[in-house]
Image (cartoon, rainbow, N blue to C red; front, side, top):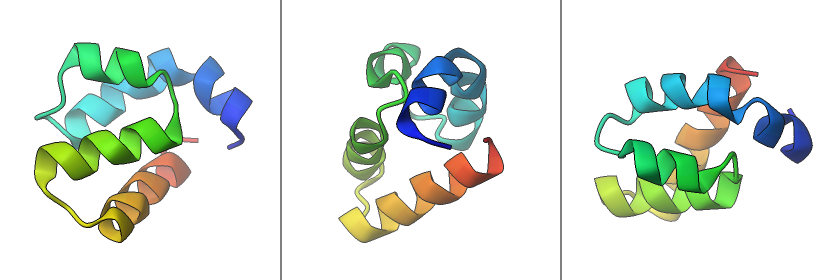
Length: 66
């Protein structure tokens, strides 16, 4: 999924993201607006994960939900 597709489908994908990362708020997910880098940063910050681990999680999530 390219960046434009991700942003265009974000409202549908946001629910799945909320299930995956329940500690992220609706506001945070809305603010991310399908921005991969922002989502990685949120996961990294909220869950205390290393950058590489957060990237892998987000990329796996995006592959499953594209």
